[in-house]
Image 1 (cartoon, rainbow, N blue to C red):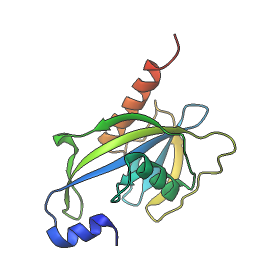
Image 2 (image 1 turned 135 degrees about the vertical axis):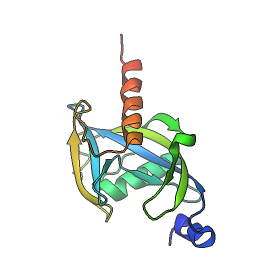
Image 3 (image 1 turned 90 degrees about the horizontal axis):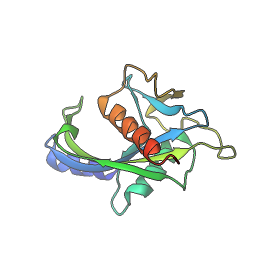
Length: 156
């Protein structure tokens, strides 16, 4: 049983403050890896922090668990928090999430992207200009922040 499951047994569906990380994984053509989840929506690979883990460690672990690729050279993009990141899940659990977003490039020699958990139906690359319609707004915000960060750091 993981940390969130343990706490949920104690507090039921009440609001829980959580921290986690998501990763924008790109390939050479600029396309972004998205995970088709079991609920039929697309999102970025990532998940929740476990006790004693850093946000970067969480991003690395979750990406490996969900995609089968181990990244050690992720770049920090931004942190997202606030009331707009308060959600009621389908099971009625209430959460407010603080999310660190990182980016990583899929380069030759890293291995192949494979579904490595029971959360994913499919892993597919999409152009940032043609993201799927069935994707939560929070992931669009994270991808927007990533795109802004690469524009800011592009050599003049």
